[in-house]
Image (tube, rainbow, N blue to C red):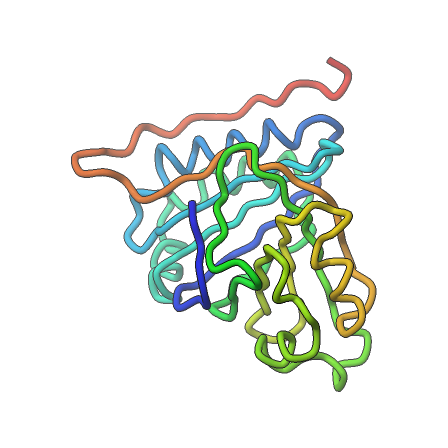
Length: 216
């Protein structure tokens, strides 16, 4: 999965809190479900599934062609198959879908298996001081040397910053000068990424998920 420049599609972030050691399992299940079912829905473009180093958080990043495609997908039972299973085993910490996103520094960012990212979610403490657009953010914070991706929620209530620079040198260390203290921050590794189907591929049947016990 590769993203580059500013977005003209709609990007979604779903952050899930899991029981201990289950993050990779949840990420793998979501990736498998997307590979076998979700990617065949009209308008699906790409998705990446990450697990936190601590094993407590799974992160899904999904690209759809446009809001209409996402709305149409949400109206199908296939869209909800894996979501109902995953949400039964996890707690949703953050969800944001938006067409306001861009890469910072790097012209393109690759979500290859094993790639490491630092992720931070910001929410405004003082709305008047909050950037009103990503251009405002880029002008306020020097992120040009960072290998990062930023998304602003459509209603401007949150910003997600995903940095591939590593936790010590990530853009998340620079952003607080304008965004404040992050509401959430952790380090993640890409478990799997999914793209649109190749010619002739057909979806597989639905299946269930059984998670290992946290004590095993």
